[in-house]
Image (cartoon, rainbow, N blue to C red; front, side):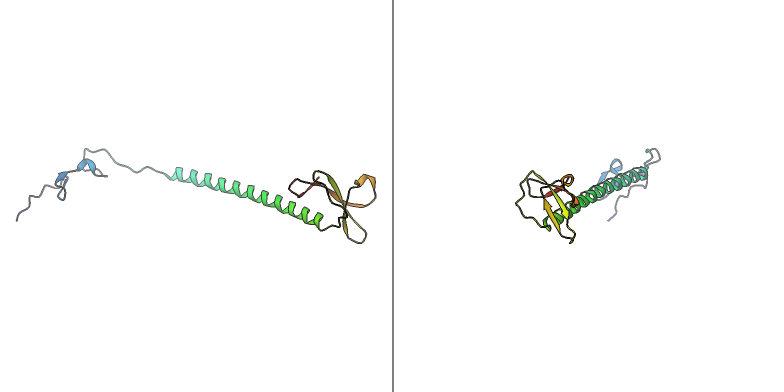
Length: 133
């Protein structure tokens, strides 16, 4: 059985029995336009720099939030480990002092009204957390 082979310069698909030069991803004749790949290096570098900057910014935001949370935790730990002889009211400012015996205590007396060793003033939030004033 003899097959009718087309010349090399003719693009013919023997499986589909169709001329498919226009469907090829490459040039099929000398008169076809030049197909060149686009240089995406600059775009990739910009994308990498943009993503790196975005991730670094997000990391710094999370780090600052974490440090703020740890600071808030330490203040709450400091106040809650102090001796409290009354029930604090939400929305009020209280003052934390240190005795000569290194014992911390919470008081309603402001630092300018006494001679205790002041550690700071704290505000009791509605969510029962202490915030340094």
